[in-house]
Image 1 (cartoon, helix red, strand yellow):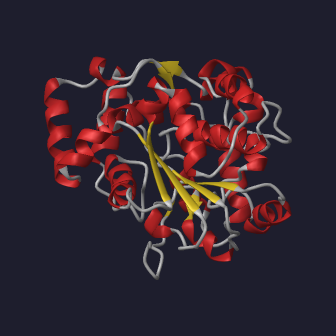
Image 2 (cartoon, one colour):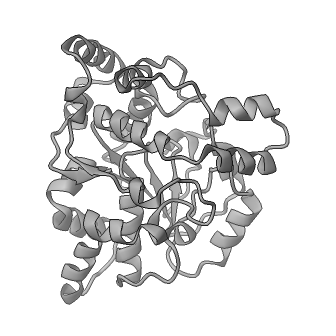
Length: 313
């Protein structure tokens, strides 16, 4: 389905080559989303559907490890996954063509308007504890120099938000070397879009989750073959809302045991979509639109740029 030889994506904190050591089980769920498209939200939804309780048996990042993140030794991550008895749901930011093709596995991708992704990513980067990240990366990446690690952890950030958004939009590095850009996001979502009719691929839009969380959760349960007793639905849906997830930030932020963020509650930043309108000029948006249409087919562009209600990052 995804090609006989997976593409290797290695950039910043991730290395898709780590998937070579993972042994799939029938029923596994791979949550393959670009950064800031709703990964943690989808992990929480899957957890609620699988455990059918708002009281999870462990922190979300323990239940659903980020397999290709280089800050944790791969042996530790595999040990956690091998010991799990429940239906597994694994986080990755690797596009589908970088993942092994395994029978009986569901691949779940969430898309979002790339302009909203850019704004969310800008806030996300400001909340990272780069001292912690650089220290952890040094412990797991002995083949890199300190200068290479510093470049990965502390990229140059322009002073103004407009300049930072434009940097994200116009970054010309190929996706294999950098997925955190317009080019990377469109490449990732374009691969899922092309395979959206494959029964093993489930493609969801962030805007649809925002507008109709109940309907999207019910559809997802059906696609995953999960039966939820009718009486449990109201409680599970409420637990997947932004307000409830934000209140549980300490248990839900990615890799909470590592201390990657200066403020775990800030990770669940709330706001309206299209905040880029107050930052980017008409000229900026015209250039963005021209670039987007050079990277994606017309139907994908229309799907990506659905308008969202007030929602969480």
